[in-house]
Amino acid sequence: MKIHLIAGARPNFLKLAPLYKELKKFPDLFQIKIIHTGQHYDLKMSGLFFKQLELPAPDLNLEAGSASHTVQTAKIMLAYEQVLLADKPDIVVVFGDVNSTIACALTAVKMGVKIAHVEAGLRSYDRSMPEEINRMLTDTITDFYFTPSQDADENLQKEGVASKKIFLVGNIMIDSLSTYLQKAQATSILEDLQLVDQPYLLVTMHRPANVDNADKLKQLFGILNELAQKCKVIFPVHPRTRSKIAAAGLTQKHENLILTEPLGYLEFLHLQMKAKGVITDSGGIQEETTYLQIPCLTLRDNTERPITIHSGTNQLLPFNHALIVEKAEAILSGNGKKGKIPPLWDGNTAERIVEILKNLEIE
Ligand code: UD1
Image 1: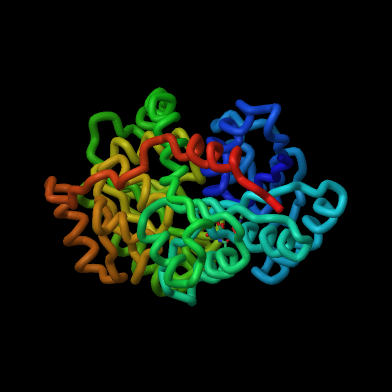
Image 2: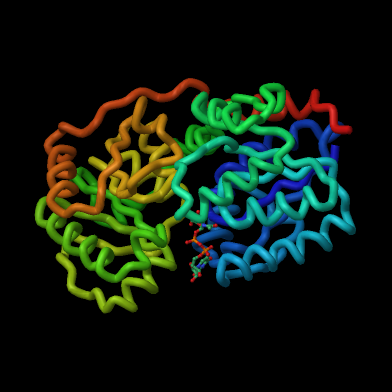
């Protein structure tokens, strides 16, 4: 079976790595290529992840780069069509919900190539998020749905997907997380940021709805500055957010509010493990904190990962200064939300996917 694994943006790499390694155990059965779309291209957003996740360099890089959503998606499609013409795989595996996911899935379906979607079925039902559009459209044309949790299966069934095409395999990001916990703890990030034995909050923020609005960004800085009076606040800044911070002219900050470059996977994982709590708008971090049992405040109106709310340590919060400070203080005083690890978030998801791929009948 000839397989293309599609890597585009930072969260994809964590999902691709365990599947790549598991497939590689069966060289007689699977011939694998890693296709990088080039959606993320900075060393800290891409190359460092490949290195830390012990992945080989991609077989091909489509070098799409940054652009408007339409241009970025179209550039990936144009380049990937040429790849598919030259090298017809039996199946294209796409991950998550980024522009690269829909771009390659759409190209594949037009060329008659089967699609497997890892992390299928998640829905926020918020169409103002580009990721929701990517998820819905990808799942409309997918052939094999690998889902992380029961809610995803139910969403797909409601949309009319045949049950025999849905495989509840668990959360593949947890495969990476559980593999690299020890290595993460060996990083010197706590020493580097002078956080050893210090309580701190960890922050990430990069959604257009939160950071593309200068007023909201100013409000966020106000909140973080207030929290910095109580403990250190570590904020690794996504390139998109960095440019918005600069554009909004936000320079005033408390000395305990520490802005860093985007961090490596291992360093960030280490910071999550030892944080008192996390404030974020990321999808993946809602899941990682649930697994690590670290309280998480997600500054969004909705989530495509409701299991992190129902079972896990995650709480959704509106962009409200007083409320966010109140909930963060509760976390700092040991009253953060407690949770359970959802079923099948056990580090063996890639193995379950490969077992299914071994027996897949592709007409
Ligand atoms: C993308 C995903 C988002 C995911 C996030 C993880 C979509 C629609 N969004 O958002 O779901 O949570 O990745 O990071 O696919 N940039 C760099 N260097 C890079 C990459 C980006 O400087 O290596 C800057 C560019 O200015 C670019 C901006 O970041 O325009 C946004 O990048 P883009 O890939 O368009 O979206 P993300 O915000 O990263």
